[in-house]
Length: 100
Image 1 (spheres, rainbow, N blue to C red):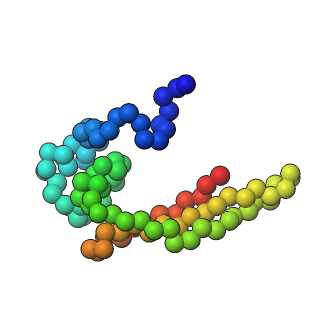
Image 2 (cartoon, one colour; image 1 turned 45 degrees about the horizontal axis):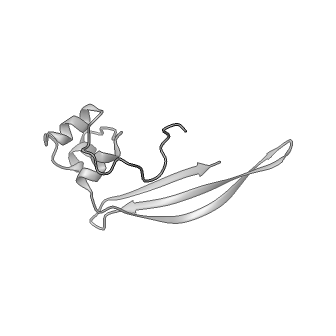
């Protein structure tokens, strides 16, 4: 029933095929560190680019909080998550997202 994304899957470890110009430069080893990407303020649109430079990333959920919106029918509850990602070597990121 449809292909969908699903979990696990049949694929296994396939070789990364870059989609963006930055991805092609990283795969060709023209860009050697993530600092070069930050220096030129290039947006990273492929997760595999980060995986290439920082393979030991660890994430931790810092806070989950319910957020409510009042509607005519009552209240709609959503959950807001704050996540920190880092590699214990000076690279740190913060992610904030609200789910339905």
